[in-house]
Image (cartoon, rainbow over the protein chains, first blue to last red):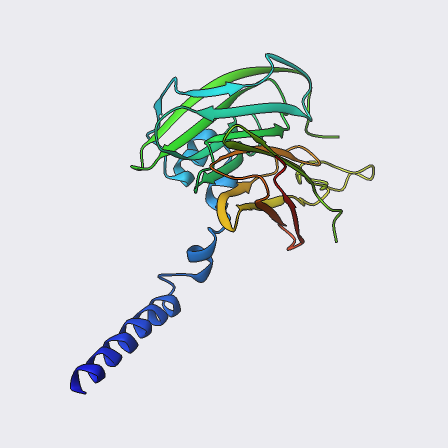
Length: 157
Length: 104
């Protein structure tokens, strides 16, 4: 009976610890279920700032990241971009547009069989480098870039 | 409430290819209207994709994603008939969830 009481107390203590951690803001429910929008990275005005916000300031160039985008985009408002990574255990891809007022465009986490591939359409204000940052399971960051020339910008009126 | 998404999910070998078209203005907050006033930013911030009850993709997007965003994903190990649930939330708190099943 004593043993049972002990187990119960232990169980209660553990649940209490989680509740306390949540209350203290250490473990926000939103972080447990869904990552919060990374304001620091998305509001960064340049690529370096955005990389810092993502935690990947020291990203190394890697040719395993493939960026498929037109060399010349006639309409900067809709530029189809396909990115993929053949680096083993890539769990995260972010797409940045160097010359846009806010470079970070998209940051995606992949899990449960999702391949590190992403097709999307971006706005490019002007001719710019499109940069892709990949993060692997061991927390290392890699990057690659490709220039896209724009004849009509996608920002402004 | 925003218009429904168009989702297409199809098996190709052992990989499901998912494409989704979302209906959204994706205002950047940089544009000015005819009167010269800045149009406030209004854009999708968060996207999640669940396949067969498992979260496979969790994405965050900024203002540089084009109007009426299209995204393409590939999910290995999914099966025909698995349910695909896609959800987005924008910076004003609007949200939308739509689902489909993977075609063979």
